[in-house]
Length: 159
View 1 (spheres, rainbow, N blue to C red):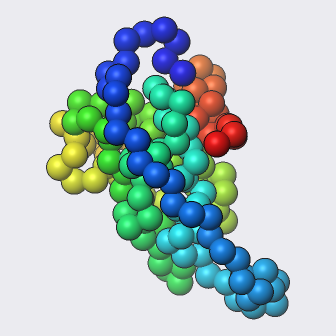
View 2: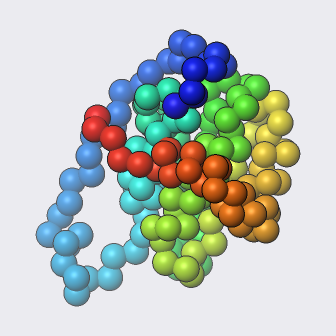
């Protein structure tokens, strides 16, 4: 997706995808209260496309289930993501893609916190500040070119 420009991380490590979540009869029963959990959030974000490579964020180990925390009772979702290199210029775009996917998928009652795993990016404070600022996120999504790139990251591709 880089449009012919030089890749920052030309040879990323590729990780095996985790198995699909097995659904039980209780999961499918509409009469049973089913709180949103870490795995459900992970399943929403694992297949987001990397902006530079034809791989998912899960395959690049940018997102992991263990870095997703959900408190359904308090309507809080927190996701840490780990860029593949410490100077990744796509970190804000990746974080924005995760945030947009969750905003589009979850009920409005949820507060969504997306941030870089501490100590894994040279500009983590600046990126985290941008991702936490609702007005900056809204302004970014009003930019049609940026929104198009985010939508490409969120588009479905065959695995």
